[in-house]
Image (tube, rainbow, N blue to C red; front, side, top):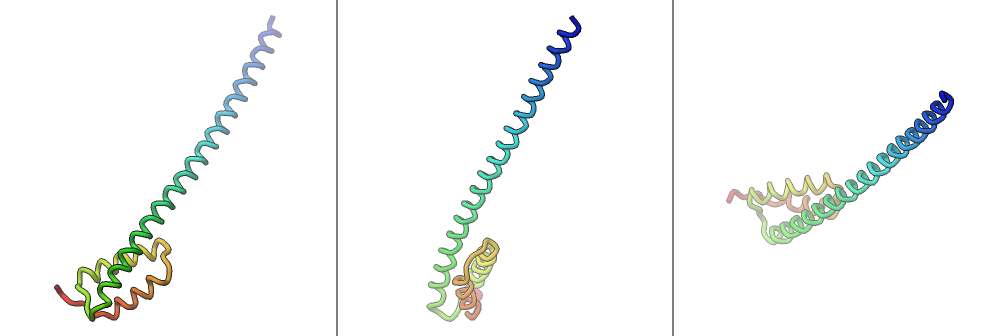
Length: 109
């Protein structure tokens, strides 16, 4: 009788061990999937912000390069947006526009 109980307990512990290992593997897989989805979402957000910054920086450049000065608040906005754009990995085209804007006279308005 004790032999039968030992065999049953061994089987149960084997099955439980298998189930725990399977749950741990599934948990690891789900965490990896979630991490990958979060990375995709974060990249999409960063790409979207980069695009919006690029549009606004180009608009400011086109508007204020027609004259010889730029209002202080616009220059500060341009500078802040440029720094964010560069931190997100923006390209050199906007850097050249920043150099153009930096040559303008900053006017207090």
